[in-house]
Image 1 (cartoon, rainbow, N blue to C red):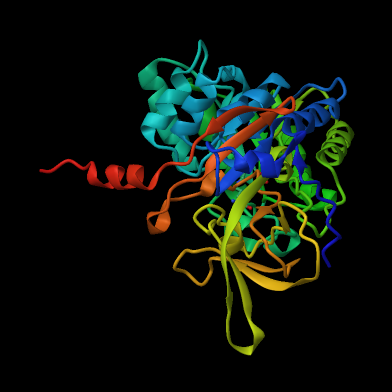
Image 2: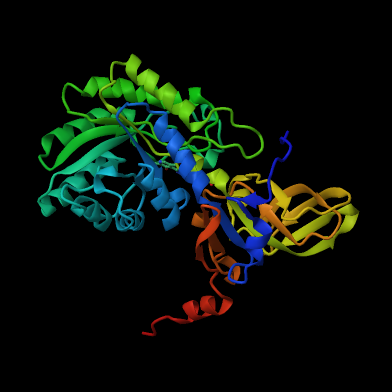
Length: 424
Ligand code: LLP
């Protein structure tokens, strides 16, 4: 059951209704409370005590510069998954040594960028297959630089043991991610044979929206054991237990990110690995709860058999999580509407039946705008221009004021972009 809503119509000290009334903003628009995101990072950083560590923010969750910069100011590095994210993190001033790069098969030019960054390349390229090791070795040799790498292990955690949606479970034996346990020995031999690579860590990421500490520890245990086995041969400096800390979308998520970390640190110490740095790669847990998608009600619609829809100007192109993972995001009115409430199916304008945000309790009376909650992670970063729709605006609130706005692209800009092709 969903818990009762305790949503304040204020966001970062500003009224959402005032924000949306700003002529430059309108709807659909994402509004982010950047201070609250920075506070999440601060709490997570503090949970390490004095232990050596790196919180590598998973930029894919939300790559907006004001957010990445605010998290970096709290000490976070970056976990990137493409040359684009890598370039962005570097341009935003994140030290190359605080960047780790995962990705199931990186392009050669992406590998080159990672090797070429800064005086010594990035913190580590997380290799995901034996085959990729060969390619990274060749690129490093060509660049004349030693690439720091980590093996991203696929710990073969059973998919049913990862209490999350199958589409966001990544550490089971059928997943394409990571080096399978059966090939680790092979991978280590290859790394040992080339002078162009230095193994500095082992890592794993078994899934996202994990709501139990025990699930997180399943793969951490495998990683720590592996680290112990290979330490005599390789001078490891860290173990990276990945991201995946869940947030409360309304059904509860008892552990906080700090609880996952404290448990992982305890296990690390028990395995005698206290000297190794503990890395993690959180995305959602730092930003998810501190962003909303604001939408206007375009109209209502009454169908057969008492069906009632509320149709928004935001759709699956703006927030795809409900369509893709059957995710539920709570929806609340932006201003209080007196009078009775009823159940409505809330949908967007996109020509797909899956453009559907689910059934929600909303006012029977005049409703102009709503906020779709917990949309700070994997919202804008997965948005598209499907159906000839434009990307939503983004508003960054800091210190009780709007710090930055990324305006919505206009319809004409979309048309111009499509028309701007090169004739041959
Ligand atoms: N590290 C790696 C290697 C990852 O693949 C991911 C997420 C993360 C870290 C960050 O995971 P987080 O802490 O955010 O759970 N679009 C989906 C989530 C996909 C996650 C993909 N990988 C969603 O909207 O739920």
